[in-house]
Image 1 (cartoon, rainbow, N blue to C red):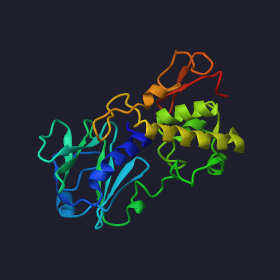
Image 2: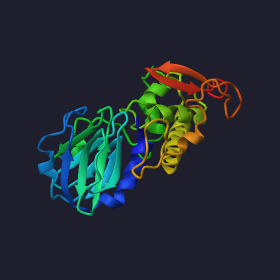
Image 3: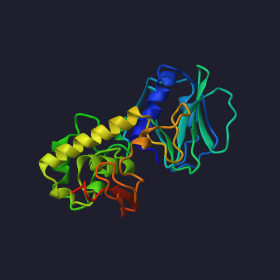
Length: 271
C-alpha cells in the first residue's frame, strides 16, 4: 500500500501540472471503487480551476473552489500524468483531463482506492475529521506521543500505526523508525518514558522525511507520478530483512506478526 512518503511524492510530482489549471472534463470508466464514484462527478468538476493540491494523511485533496476531490490510492493505486488522448489501459478507472494538455490518471487494479467529491469543508469529511496530527507538523512531538500512549497497553508499533494517534506511519516506516529509535516494537506503549517518546517522535519524522526525499519505497507496484520508482527501499535497516544480519550489530533480524502485518526488528538493538 502506498504510505505517506509515496503519497507525498505523488503530490509533489503532480503539483506544477495541476495548480492553477482548469479542468476540461473528467472520465469515469469504473465506478466500483471502495466507495462508488458519483455519477454526477464529471458534471461537478468540468470547467473548474484547481486552486491547490494538498495532502492529509494518505489522502490527496484537490481543491477546486466549489468543492474538493478527495483521492486515496488504496492498496495498489497509482496517480500519474499522461498526455491528453493517451489510450487507457486495463485498470485505468478515472481521468481528470486538464486544459493544459495533461491528464491525471488513476490506475487501481484492486479498486480499493477512492475518488470522492466534497462540497462542504473537506476536513469535516468522515474519513478525515477524526485523524490525528501529521507526523511532520509541529503538532506531533514527544509530548504529544507521550500523552497519547499513557493508557495504551497495545504494542508501540501498533499504536504509532493508529491514525488517531498520528497519521501516515504505515508498516514499513513504523518498523524503520522503531529500529532507529532503539525501541522494541513489542513493548507496551504506556511503558515508554517521556524521553523515549521524544526520541521516537524524532525518528518517525526523520524516517519519513528521508523517505520523501528518496521518492518513497518501491517494493511492489508503487511508482511516482513521473513513472519512476522510489529508492528508499535501498535504505531499509530491518524491513523485509528477516533472517539477515542487522546493519548495526550483525545480529539476525527477526520477523513477527503484529495486527496481521509483518514486523521486522533487531532484538539486540531494540529494547
